[in-house]
Length: 514
Image 1 (cartoon, rainbow, N blue to C red):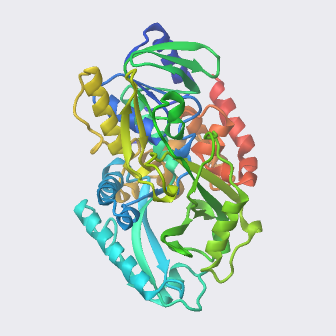
Image 2: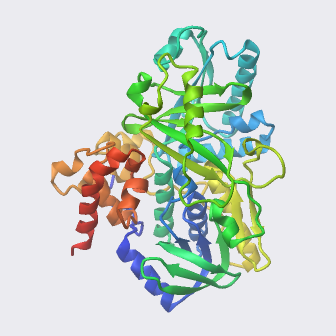
Image 3: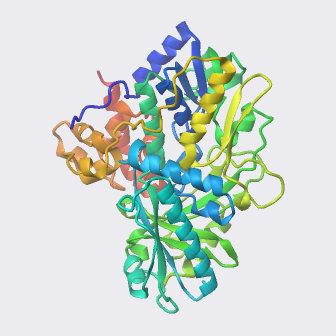
């Protein structure tokens, strides 16, 4: 298998400068997409793969907002069945199948998820949950996902439950229910993969380039590195800025909610062989999740609280969210972690459509494409798993409104850069961690070491200097924050980020040298 980067898929400072210069000379473009999260990157790829000329503008960095703060799950829609949202559940199962089998099989893998049955879960509740899991199995089969890719749910014994999650409290444990869902190695990696694949189809990906004015056939962008204004003449414009969509489209009504996660050491939880689903006491429809990650980290989440006031660029984490998650987790563990065991925290904001009264936790995860009087389309709502379907609808709407000549949607069968299934990846000559994060491009990442083994030695959180160099040369990382907060997730733990800081500076300096 070739170790070369996909042709045209490299993002870096030099390409950004060329794209800005080309756009300044000829500002005409079929589609302008504003917002570099999973939705915006997905829209750019959908449009470019249909043959349209596309500019993707993001005022910060790829995956800067909500798209890096998720639970990293590719849901099959089980939660939506519980609230009667059958259509969304069916769509989620279909999109999960596309991600796992075609789009990004190198980034999504099966995750066993254990619901421990302690005394707090009554037998009636357990029976209801089992019914839901069987319905989830039916959705999986209807989406075409085989049991070889995602096994069927099943009940497990007390002994098996403790094997899967050794840190569980054993007293009162009568067994568990085991199901399977999809887990992303990293949500930000998915966004970068989408953007790079869009670039391979000709998209100009312009990070640090914010939209100051949006009209149906005109936009003003501002290069945040130089301060220069750029006048763009798109035939259609899509606002895909998530919880910040109202800043560019005031008519869109959102009710953002905050989802908080804790970062713990896996050793503190006894060594997990499965994720753990923890019922929230007093609320039969809510659960906390204990999610094992690469490199010995575990995420514990998540809260679902309404956001008061304007959406900040990086949401703070209130102490009461931390206390809540520790309290829920403590109810099922033999040795509950304390505040001193929390290595890091993060929170994301969900761009929920305003449906009137009710808790944010009860709001639908449906998405919508809304047109402004000026002709700007806003794609909003939804969730990470169904980004592709949302993108397809947004591009369909843009093509129809602007009379664009475009082919049919191709993204159901279009693999991202690096995509390869497990069998193919086993034959890729590269370290296992690189194969898990970069797929078929792993040998190219390893080649960044250029014969120096030290550049392939993990520095912190499993991250190597070779990965940082690759991120600068091919993934559009422009500064330390891009490297430590998004191309890697080292900054989730302050000590890890500090240990990697010099290597990040070296990678940026190396890219500047001729």
